[in-house]
Length: 334
Image 1 (spheres, rainbow, N blue to C red):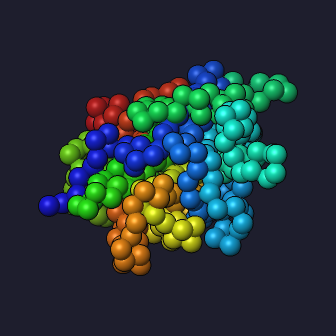
Image 2 (cartoon, rainbow, N blue to C red):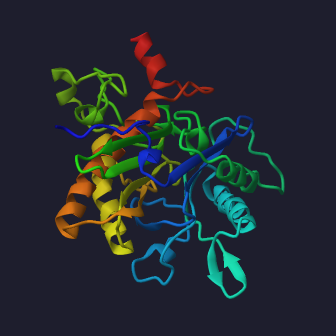
């Protein structure tokens, strides 16, 4: 029997995870926070492309001292969005969650950002950045069910010539292990074939979750294109893949590295000088691996498929915003 998506087809199908979104329609930007129910999760990261914006990535190196993180943030706002982690930290500290250094509590909250500053929203917020409050609000409202498309970090995203968005997907393996993916899609590369409009990730789609369109022969003769006006730092797909299998930081790094194949499958080209493509690998550590190396390889393969599906869903579920036309509106006009 082929593995199927779990109950929600969301990353929160991985036991022990919750996701919160917060967005501001005036500034056309938002924040997504991934929170472990236990207070901590093991994580590492694989970042590629020429425009990565990040916080606390060094702590995710396998040799770094801190063993686990307390939340993960995906945010719009470019470098201003890095302030979102501060709001998440304040929320976690108020609950007593974080790395304990004597009497001090320091929540460990890595973050990756995407550029949505030029999408038509009002970014004149003065001296007070909105992102700490957005981060705190997203963390406070984290739940197992959450919105896709124009939500959280995907609220103001513009991707692949369409309105970008937040996507997610999951898969449950025969042994009960769950893999999930979460992606905020703001890529410079294309996600669809130019003639049929089928997603590049059409071959891993399950149950028509992003429209069920398939390529036509004419698609094969099309060349590589950059549908957005590509300028340095203005694009990025930021994502996380997660599993309830027990992984070390080094294994989480390998898990994230393998999942990048899903990003390159769904977006062409990816990892360009204009993108800051980033994938976090996360483990909630609830299921032991009997054979760590071969089972990790299998988990990574499913993570790649989940991420490709999450990227396509992020674009498919988005709604038009300003001059950014959504995929479904474009499809209906064809």
